[in-house]
Length: 418
Image: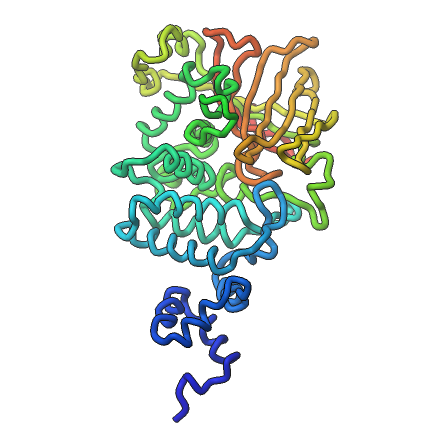
């Protein structure tokens, strides 16, 4: 009887691509001939491309980066190996070595960000990457491990992935909500060093994902109220969760040639939160110290009121300025109106860590009053929108602060309740 070694090469390869990647790796260790077939030179990735395409992931040839460019070059073998290692850890956390946690987090973030874009807002085009990542995270304890000692880099990656994912079950705990509010409303977290927004305090302009995730949590709890249904849900699907992080890029659109590459022009809804200014000052000790402990009991008080409001915003591009550090993604200067009366002026640009920053001021009768700094969550033109913080243009020590969520609405869609 003929053995497997007597099979034609193309038949043998077809059998291999139907195997789980871990079984393929095991097979490669049984004979040197199999090893050289499975691990050819780096220039020949035909087998690994076919093996990758058998998995429940987006076709890398159709994927775009977070800034809207086709994914190039494509490393089929390396990418698949990293994903399968992440799968192993997500299904068996005890297999994770501390030094590889950042790699696993980055792998999952890459899957979320390097995905197939949506071509039209009216058509549901779920990313297979997103379906897989969401399913793996909701069945694993990897995203939230309070007993792990985290490096600053790991913490940033974890908070970034958490923001993309949406609400976890622990986010519905009162203590978790208090923790997020305590950070968002702490005046010491808004200085010139971080542009009074969710950025690092080192003046680098890099995004502080812990800050963004706290803003996300505060805003989300007004969209997805804590009920028995939401708290027990395997995954809460809402406009600040993973499916909304996909880029919206029309068929044939080349963002390198688009003046409005960020999709600024159009109708938006801006939702924002604030609390009583007197309570804010008391909580912050009247902002007299950056080191004194803050007493968060105010947020646990049943009488604490956090106001949530929404307003309609119309934006249009006024001009662009080339950014030598990011060719094809110039700074976009924009203007517009709020509720048809107040004026809004700002810009969109790419940050040093390749995120998309939104800055704008607003006011009436030509006087700027409010200043806002935000970050586009997910990919360029994502329906998720922008999360950030607002304060006054004066940036005085006792000025109010709060979070906001800016997201684009359809032309025939009205903004939510105010």
